[in-house]
Image (tube, rainbow, N blue to C red):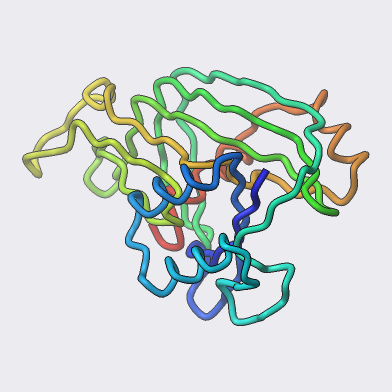
Length: 219
């Protein structure tokens, strides 16, 4: 398993931090990540240097723990495949403002893992039939992703006329896919991670976190 630590583009203005993503195929991640977003030449160079073995961070600190590409055998404590259908929910940005989203079918793969000395719940997903509600214009619209470039956003249908009021079913072929596993939760210790497996449910908070890179900083 690889952990990729990058500058977090969902933080509010004036603040900064990093975010961790996970993949079992670093080459696949690189290809899809570079295609999914507007990656600067400098960030691409840092990523490649780190992938090739140099200690390089995507942050203001040179702390080796923030090295962009890290590999570890780790451990997988549990996995769950969850499918959610016909769900409408809210996601919140860094300023605690929300957007309302709808997904027709949401296939989510959760894993509970140890990487190094840290314990995570990570998730990847396909969200099919996805759209968002514009409460100012009182209509459903196609989704634009504003956060970290780790999502593939296939927009098959989008509005052509500002006066259109399409129904949710118009967006049935629009899809958002993750290019890797996202960090969905960080646990204090191994016991907490293991205990969460049996008690875990997909709550509003879990869905909010899954869409953190959709709504972004101020989407």
